[in-house]
Image 1 (tube, rainbow, N blue to C red):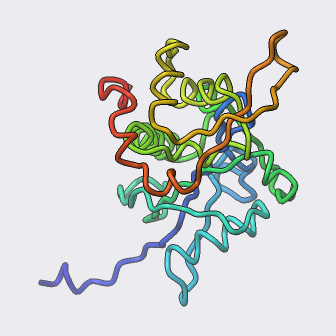
Image 2 (cartoon, rainbow, N blue to C red):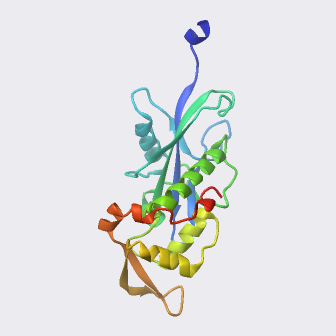
Image 3 (cartoon, rainbow, N blue to C red):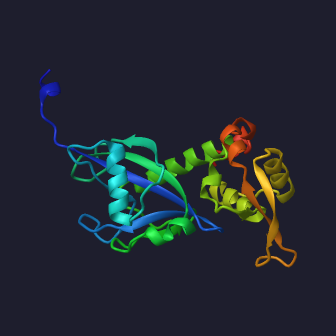
Length: 234
């Protein structure tokens, strides 16, 4: 009973995993840590909760304060509470992740904390257990992307099938057969073919597509098991 009543000293924090797509590669946003320990090392965007705010409110505040990004939809990932995860200090962290089109948000990002985008498959060494947090976020992203078309949130308003395929290949760290990939995507009826082409990346050009927003909202079940389950946790 004494153990239950003993006062404990620990802090609550939030960590934000921001995945972005630049038209070619899936990337993670990280910043340079501004204080010890590990000052100057690469870190997820994160910070401590204030007394009068929820974890969700803290995540929004911290993300805007450290990167300038605002108005993102973030989904709660997991609570990390290993006793030694924060070094000498006990820190319990709630992690959130978000998906963004880098081109849309690039102008918002401020440079105060030296934010940088790294390819999701070529990340630098991160402080504490942040690499573990990122790996769990990647697993959840792969799982959800196999069941629902949420990766479309990373795309610009119009995109080509090669761009879409390169995004899925970056997420799953594998190659997809072009013919099968196109056939499966088009069979969902979620994409609308446009008349104009991207002429920069091939001689023939690649048609642009856009997402049918009405079908997107109602079409999650059509997308079920788009990617084989054997690749979800690869």
